Image 1 (cartoon, rainbow, N blue to C red):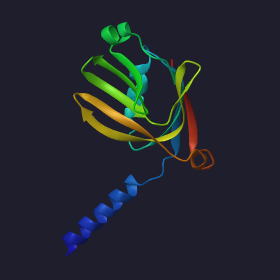
Image 2: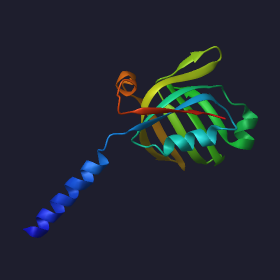
Image 3: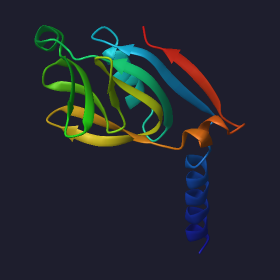
Image 4: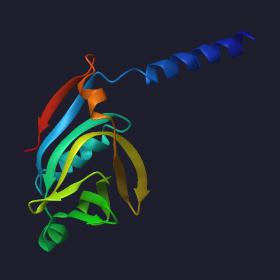
Length: 150
């Protein structure tokens, strides 16, 4: 009985710690390009199951950027995908359905929960799932930290 109670208390403590509210939300701003795409995709991946802010633009990549630098951007089936990796067969991909095409570039602007999409043929996939921007911005316990892409 004591052992069972100890396990239940330990599990309750672990679930309380995991459910701790997020106090800092990073908001990525700027233009994603071949030079900063790896930093962006990896920073998003590092925030799995957390809220992030995103206010970015991204243009289409060239064939040369994909062949030589393994950078790929595209919008297919109502989903925007940004991929960057060390080679054409592995890397990190960030996808979202919440985007628009404006003045020749794709724009993503809002607050999102980062969800793990799994691994597909060596590519780690993360989805940006929209969340209530007002709930993030108006929460006095949350600090939004701007992170400009360079």
